[in-house]
Length: 148
Image (cartoon, rainbow, N blue to C red; front, side):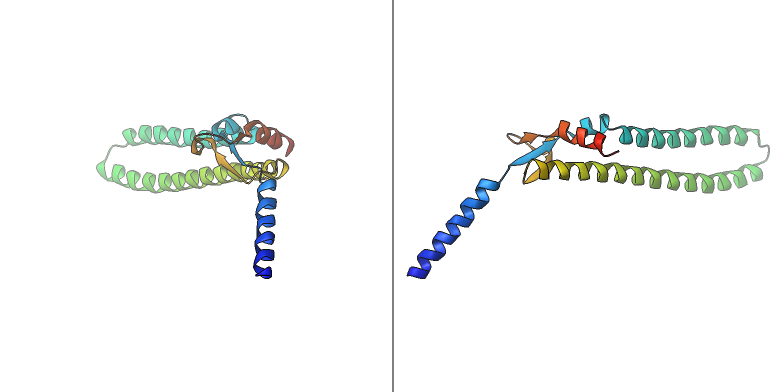
């Protein structure tokens, strides 16, 4: 019986100690972080420029296509252009995914640092928080500015 009481006391102490160190839940407005993060803005511009480059490629190829005079030349041109465009599209998709992952990783790194500094238990996107929590958006933005 004495061992049971000691175990209950120890368990109570552990539970209370854990609760006293809990910092709560933080949340960030991811869109605001992206809008205020220079690296994310540069990455977005780079991806957008690559998209515009692909559009210009299609416009140029359409002009070339219209200048062709025989159905055989047109068919050959279509096949070649489709292959070239597929390669460009794949490169675009890969670039976009790579840049998005880089931005996300840097934001996640900054958010983790803020979580540790403020002794929070977790950080969520603000869209997942209905009530409560601590808005750490500005802290994450400031941390990103200092990571340069």
